[in-house]
Image 1 (tube, rainbow over the protein chains, first blue to last red):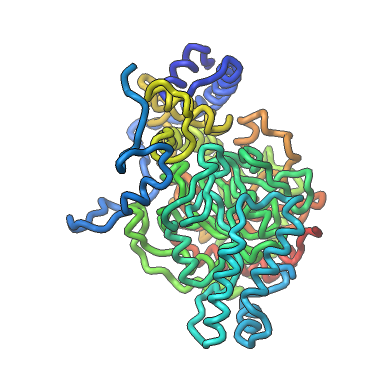
Image 2 (spheres, rainbow over the protein chains, first blue to last red; image 1 turned 180 degrees about the vertical axis):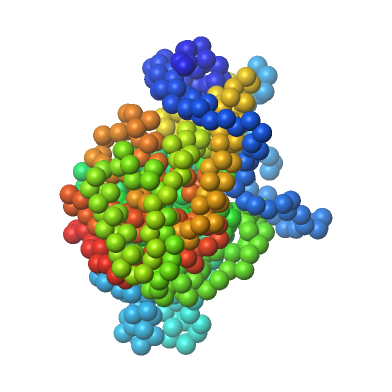
Length: 95
Length: 485
């Protein structure tokens, strides 16, 4: 199992990471090794086994549909890198 | 003053007799940090003024004969991925180097209710991703027993600060061993509670189906008291369990007669340092002398735990860390032309190598065409591992293993080889996969470095885990050793 530079670039794009050429090379090698190792799981027959998606044994957690207090807007905006009129400000979505 | 010399009971007595004030305790903690932390690097942020002010308030209450909480006046450290209102919370990442939370995590609220005094925020692996506390974006933590060695991770700062006698106890978080492994390397006690026992509200998420907050303490008794303070249902965490919380101090009986202990052979075999194995065997003899039944048994799926864990935890991480996009908080690249560039530049500058590596692995295993082969496959294997534990606990009360296959390793020796670093968590990961409680207690030294004994219990049976750990501790002297600084 080995991962090509092109695959690393594709995954980085999905993950919204910009990698240097050096990083691409490093991750291609390291991820290949890690994937080779995790392929070990294929030794196990998991036919008909339910996937475990959470660690708690509980069922749905429900509550009454009532309005409850949440953080005030000025608190939420306190760590915003840029804001305007109580909104998060970002560069244009389209060029 | 070194906090290793004080039992909670003695401190309470001294405080109530006014032989000691909270201000003196807090000043002692700050002085110890000033004297030792340049060598250790356990703290990222100190809350000196706030702590002294809090101490003064508590002293006034003491004078007025007011109510005292369970952890009254104790100076504590909090891992820097637990949010604290008005106090910098960085996760040891450039991404959050200026992040000041606007609310307290539920555990922080609960500790405040019990009158513990927050001294500061402890260093860690970036976003809790690592086993050595070397991936901190600011500086590595050093092991108080030998400064050339790692303290373990990711809660390395919390473990080192307790071991160095800087604070009375600390909180950490454990996703694949991040409380127990550093506790083991630093010669202290570390408890990972059952998944759902302690609220995760306000813990910066790494892998949400694994993460649990827990105590790092000098001894088992303290671990029971801290757990008492932080356990319990929280409506702010939908995975928080609705169960009655027992009185954990009732577990401290010293009695293990008839306790059925299983020793999984896979945790004692190849890859485990023979000197570590000897320490565990000596510990098992102590249990036998106390009247426990010790039996070797098998957990055949153990060898698949590391692969399962890294696929699932990295997948969850890639999703959880998507929130760091330079828009609502955290680092923002100011020179981006458009929104996509803003994401790409902010994330690439904010995250370190290990975080990027795990996001990449997780994104890959969740991506179209690979999902079934990696993510879904690992979820199924997780079911098999959990079943195997459930089956084991129909026959045994607890399982005993080494916490780690070796003592601490030298700084720099594994950081460039991710897979070797990951294998270090082989003994601790299975409890996170199954969501069950486990504790690490000191069981001796190898080459002057501490070794940890792990006791794993069934879900929500912290009582038996604490009882076994306490009985072992009370019949040995390992926990009385502490490093010279």
